[in-house]
Image 1 (tube, rainbow, N blue to C red):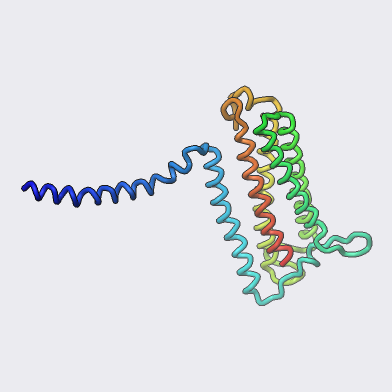
Image 2 (tube, helix red, strand yellow):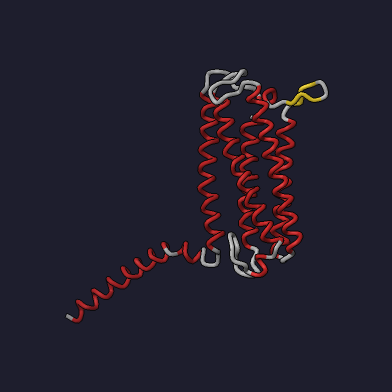
Length: 240
């Protein structure tokens, strides 16, 4: 009898350790994110889901472009601007890319000064970032207007494959919407930084605990993601 109990204990011990190991593996996420705020963790999850959406859009675009039997419009001709008596290819797109990448630099500086609790510089840099973002959206609106005037529609265009219009408006429109919302939230957070809401812990939308500028970093994560997505759009849609 005594020997039987010992045998059961010998078998139960490793089995229990194995289940404890499995439970620890499942709980590792909680330990990994224990020092991360909910705001930052949720932003990372949102960006991950957004990555899947943009990836699906770009993969669909590449599939359509490769499989179509009709010649694809030449981006250098479609997106050229007539300046100084000649067509300059992709000049507007190059300026848009420069503006957006510059805004990523100003956003990084805003996050840096936010953690230094330099309220004035943080707010100014966020406003500059918002201005650059609004400039990008304005140039994109000009680009859309130009192409629509030239006859580009989601179902047809004058230069070749009819799928060009639908993929162009879908991908650039979805990205432009992200930039627009980013500009709006940048203005909201910049106003709160300017009036000292994060120093006093004043109650309100997007206000964290007193003395913490973490929301500025969260905005920075979103803005850098938007900039990174544009790099892929620029490479795959305009340069390919």
